[in-house]
Image (cartoon, rainbow, N blue to C red):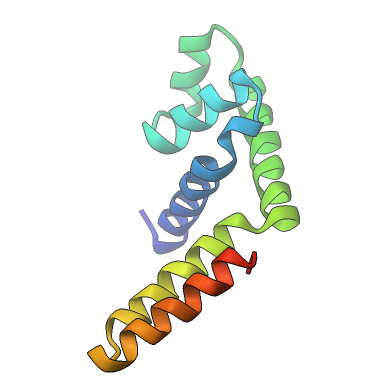
Length: 112
């Protein structure tokens, strides 16, 4: 797999973990089968008893919905930002670390 394909898979797995509950049951099953279990469109179609084209269409719509949710809500970006900030704090000298944690905690409490 190329790096672009892996990056896309990682992104949609991350989006799905954050926003998957907002999809329909069928969309969740298709996205999970495709991205988490790495099944082909044909394998998913056969398992669900519908056409490959229907699976492709449902997957595309689910991907659009996931991207839309992220564009509107930004939870994945916020999560990523927090992870990076915690990683930077961990590398600070011990004397500065507590103050940085407290500052970040205050931001979180006040709704970043």
